[in-house]
Length: 346
Ligand code: HEC
Ligand code: HEC
Image 1 (spheres, rainbow, N blue to C red):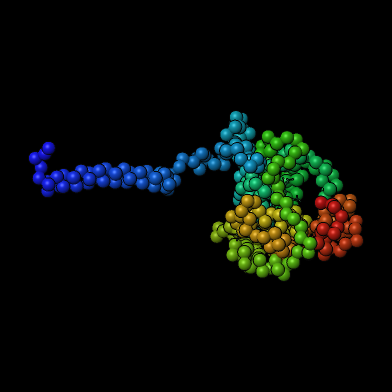
Image 2 (image 1 turned 45 degrees about the vertical axis):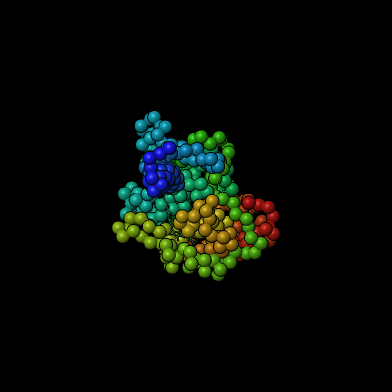
């Protein structure tokens, strides 16, 4: 029983319907809002990084893929050692500042390159020619010199070849710092072992010879914008260091250097060049890496007297570009391949 007129009843019914609808709408809108917020959480609120970005090189999370990672310098208690390690790192990163054209320790005693130009991220980048395996494997026999080499000798090898410069005195503070830094990097690596991701990434050899002509096209397309058409790189305006290091010409590595071997060059660029590439984000195809290596290493560069290298010619690597060889293959084939038909030497 009710006192409402039929019209009033209908009005009341529609009001209650609208209230219900509003309540439903309210919940739907709230639900949608929550959904959108979770989707865009990263952009709106920013997820808290695991590691403080500013100290990322100091505190590293263990690599889930098992690749070698540089230890944190936070762990060094001894102040004097810490200082030496940090100085060593600085010498690797900013070598030109100390030994380059306007070097503060010994000016003009190198070609002006930094060790880091080839040992990326201070010698810590995965497959960026890092120093992960060094400390665990020196001193060791090296067929290039035919003798047992210690770390001092190895460091000076790169000064004299890759930096086409003068060696450091083995008792200098600079040599001590570089060696201490490299030993620190490898301190957790078991003697004689090679951690995953150290040195260069392997690259399958091609069945054909590497082609400098094809490589020249790759170079113009993918390298010249930074390393310049002339291959001579680009100096910073203050003349203290290279912004883009040279790949050939008078300030590049000499023909006794490791990169002058086409396999080393190809392995390096495949995982690291053009700048921004990495082992899990390669930019060049394998063929491009091989061909551009052949192109760059067919350009002019300083010569080194290497007549005493490789005293046992049967220990020469397949891609060593200078004879005499223990087999009958030509210098050209040793330099550019194909290497697959040669015997199984490294
Ligand atoms: C132009 C490129 C280049 C530059 C610059 C360079 N290196 Fe190297 N370095 C190489 C290459 C390539 C190898 C590996 C050679 C090989 O295995 O035949 C190497 C190897 C080494 C090794 C041994 C690594 C190992 O795993 O056995 C040490 C140590 C080293 N370099 C130190 C230095 C230092 C110190 C400097 C700076 C003074 C320097 N390098 C500058 C290219 C370079
Ligand atoms: C965007 C700029 C850029 C491009 C493009 C680039 N590079 Fe580099 N490259 C660099 C820089 C910068 C370094 C030094 C890295 C460092 O010091 O951390 C370098 C280092 C190198 C090195 C070792 C140092 C030396 O001078 O010998 C080689 C070899 C090299 N690049 C080859 C190449 C090749 C081959 C290509 C093309 C496939 C290429 N790069 C494209 C910027 C570039």
